[in-house]
Amino acid sequence: METIPPLAALAALVSAMAHAGMALYTRRATDILAFRATSMGMTALWLSPVLIFSPFPSWEVWRFLLLGVGLFWAFNMAMIAAFERGDMNLVYPVMRGAAPAIAGVFAIVFLDEALTPIAILGLSIASAALIAFAWPEKGGAPKAAALGFALSAAVMTASYTVNDAAGVRASGSALIYAAWIFFLCFCTLSLTAWIRRGRGVLKAARSQFKGAFPASFFNLTSYGLALYAYANAPVAPMAALRETSVVFGAIVAAVILKEPLGRRRIVLAGVLALGLAAIQLG
Image (cartoon, rainbow, N blue to C red; front, side, top):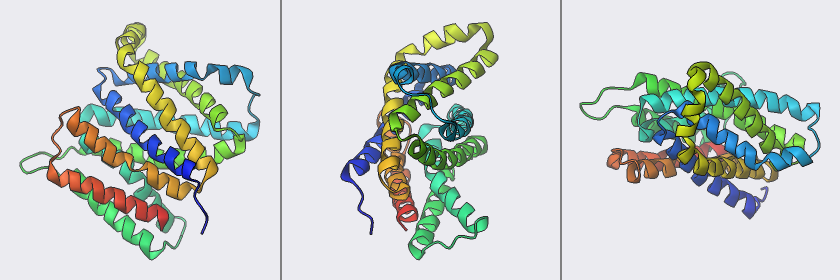
C-alpha cells in the first residue's frame, strides 16, 4: 500500500475548510458574479510576482491551463446559478458531494471500469444521501432548478479535479500553475461580468470588495493546498479528504448564515462524507 505523506493529507483537509469558507462568502454576496470576478482578481494580484518572475509555461502545461479555465468558468456559472436559487445547506453538499458519485457512475457506464465492493458500497451510500439531501422538507417545495445547477457544478468539479492533477504535475510547480489559473479565471469572469453588467461593472465590483478581500485568501488557500496535495500524493484519497468540505459547509451554513439544517441534514452530511471516502479509497 502506498504511503500517504502526512503534509499532503493535512493540506487536503485544510483545503476543505478553506473551500467551505469561500462558499460562505460567495453565498452572502449581493452580486455573486461581480464578487467572484473581484475575488479572483485579488487572488491573481497576490500571485502576480509568481507570474512575473517564473518561466513562461510550456505548451504541455498550457493544454491543461486552457482546458482548466474553461471548466472553471462553467463551474462558476453553475455555482452562481445554484446559490441564487437555493440555500447553501441544500446546494453546497450536492455541489461538492455529487462530483465523486458522478465520476464513479461515468467510470462504470462509459469506461467499463470495475469498481471494488467498497467503492460500489460508497457510491450507493453517497447517492442515497444526495437524494435525501435534495428531498424537500415536509410541506416544502422541491428546488429543481437549484439542484440542477448544483449537479452541473459537480460535473465541472469532477472534470477540473482530474485536469488540474495532471496539469500541476506537468508544470512541476503547484504555485506557478495556480497563479496562471487564477489570472485566466479573473480574465474570463471579469469579461463575463462586463458583458452582463455593462457600464455598472466597476460599481458592482466595488460593492463586493469587503467580502471579496477575505475570500481571495480562501481561494488561494483552498486551491493552492489542493494542488499541493494532488502533486504529492495519490489523487483519490486526497479528493476524499477534500470532500469533507461537505460537512464544514453544512456547519457554517447553519451557524453563520442561520439556514435551517435540522438533524436530518446533519446526519446526512456525515453519511455523505463517509460514502465519498469509501468511493475514493475503494
